[in-house]
Structures are given as C-alpha cells and as structure tokens.
Image (cartoon, rainbow, N blue to C red; front, side, top):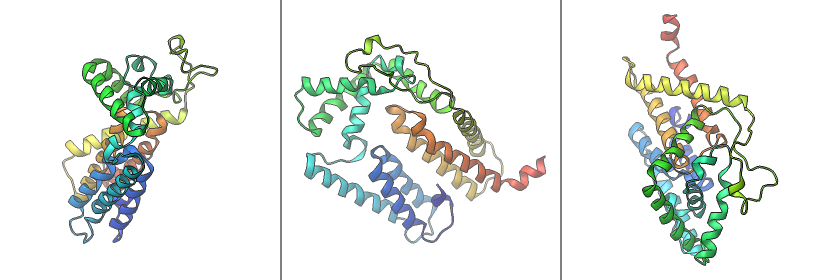
Length: 275
C-alpha cells in the first residue's frame, strides 16, 4: 500500500518484487497480484516501467505453473491451481458449516476431504482437485441461501465480531464426533478486535464519503481511495468465498489505519478549519 501511494522512482521495481513474494507465499492472492498491476498502469502513466509489475507477475505465474506441472501434472494458474484452495472450499460446502462457523474452526470438516479421497480412490493432487472443485461449485449452485448465510457471517466477523478465532474443542475427535459437537463454544473477547474493527468501519465510512460525496477531489486522494478499495476487495474476495477469521483480516485492519492516517494528513488543514 505504501509503495502504491508513495513517490519513488523505483516503485515499479519494488512493487514487482513485493507482488511476486505475495504470489509465491500465498496461493489465494492471485487476483490481488494480477489486478493491482493493471491499476498501477492506469495511475502511473508517466512511469517508464509501469508495465514491469504486470509482466513480472505473468512470468512468475507461468514459471510456477510449469514447476507444478512437472511435479503433479497440474499447470497451476489462478485460484484453482492449488489443492489447498480446493480443500478449503470443499470443507465449507455443506449445510453444517453455517451452523458451526465462526464459533468453531472449519477443520472439523477435514474428514469430508478424506472421505472423498477414499471413496474415489484419489492418488494425486490433480485427481483431488478434479473431484473437489466441481462438487463444491455444485453445492453452491444448489444451495445459494445456505451459502449466503455463511457469507453474511463472514461479513459480520470482519466488521463486528469481537471474539477470538473459532477453535476445535479439546479432546474432540474430529472424524467421529462431529454430530455431538456443541456449536456454542465459549470464545473470549479479544479487545484488540474492538479497536481494529471500529477503526476499520470508520475507514469504510470515510472511503464511501470520499468516493461519492466529497465535493473537492484531487488525484492524490482519488488514487489512495481506489488503491485502498481495490486491495480490500481483491484481498478479501477469496476468504469470502471460503472462510475468514481475524488472523486473515489483520493486514486489512492495519491498512485501514494507514488509510485513516493518510486521509487525515491530506485533509488536515480543512479538518482543522472546520473545527
């Protein structure tokens, strides 16, 4: 975020390095690492190397795809190139998920993946993904209401839920006793969540105001607004599809605070004059 909104003649190089690291370290960040360079081209029209981040990500993606193809027979491209992403999506594609989430972690459904592996006699990652992705997509298409409840709970967790991340009860046999699980597991309040989510919600209000109601706009503020909005959407989208916890949202809470700081700095004089 700092690289995108800052002024540095080498920002295209720095951005290429950072996005490449994000892509290689986090399989769910394909959309973020691919679309941010496109926005960069739009905003940095005078940068001689404005195409470098996009070219770099394409090369890194192709290289990673060739590497995975040589080892597993899968050309990993985009979010469907990871067996972990496929497993996470399948674990939440059931009617019980919206009942246990977010109080209890979705790992209680890992046995469902094991059942598919045994039932279909799956031998490798390619076969696993070919089974899990269609099954997950069919469930979502056939149960839109149930899936939507899970999405609403994810939004609630992101913006309001003050408790610690869901966990599996101690001495609980994940594979055998799912039906006996008490879904009302006690989770302690994490007070940092109260602060982080309050500031996050304030940042969303200010972002909405700045984009749609602020009369006097300039290119710097507009660029910061769009970059912040784009990072929020592109980062959170994969988690909204699968599952989200505060540990996944921490980076967005930090960026929201940076956004509030930049908004204050860029509008300091006007804010003080209005007091």
